[in-house]
Image (cartoon, rainbow, N blue to C red):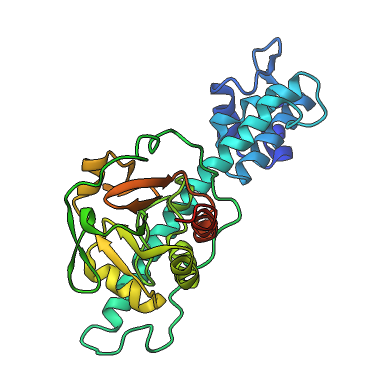
Length: 318
C-alpha cells in the first residue's frame, strides 16, 4: 500500500505519515524499487495515533500504545505503560484546568472591581453570583499525613508576641490567662471575587479554611461550655481582609493577623509556599497559662475540626 492510500484510509495527511515515520512510530517495508510499502498494521497504528491525538495525547507520547498493539494486544491501552500514559495525560489536563480556573477567578475579580468602581454598593450587596463556593469541600481533597512538624509543641512556653486582632486591639499571646485558649491557625480564607493561589485544591491541607471557621462559629458556645475561655483564628492575612471574613461569616470570635509569620519563627510552626506566598499549615493550639498544652496536627478534614477540638476539651476537663 502506498503512502497516499494509507493517509486516505487513516484520515490524515501524507505529511503527517512522514512525521510519524521520522519518530519511528511507523516502520514500513520497502519494495524492490525503494518505495515504501504499508500494510494493515500501519493503518491500525495511524488510526490509533489520530484517536489519541483527539484525546489530547501528543504524537510523541503515543509510543506505549502503539507498542502494545505491535506486541499483539487487541487494544492499544491493554498494557501497563498505556495506562501510565493515560494517567500522565490526565495529570497534565488537571493542571491546565486549575490554571485556567485561577485565571478565570482573576478575570471575575477584575470584572467586579471595574463594574463597581466608584460605587458604594458591593457585588455581594447586589446579590451577584460570586462564582466560587468556599463553604463546601471537594470530595477528592488530598489526605494529610503527619510529618511530625508539630510534635515539639506540647509543653512549649508561648513567646511574647502581640498580634493585631479584628476587634481593633492587639492581643498578647503569652498573656492570655490561666484558662484554656483555642487558637486555630490556617493558611488563608477564600473571599468572593478574589482568586485563590494556583492549584489550591491540590495542595494537601490548603483548602477548607472557610468551612473550618464556620465550624468554630457553630460550636463556639459549646467550646466555651467545655472549658475554653476564648477562641481565636490566626493567619498571615492582613486585618482588613480578616475583618471582612469575620463580618461575612458572622464569626463570634476574633481573627489575629500575623503577616510576618512571627509565631511561626518563634515556635517553629510548619509553613508552605505557593504562588510566591509563604503560608501557615493548618494546626490548632490549646494554650493554658502561657504554655502549649496540646497541638492538633495534621488537621483533616477541616470542616470537622471544631468537633475534634470540642471532643478533646470534653475528654480533658480541668
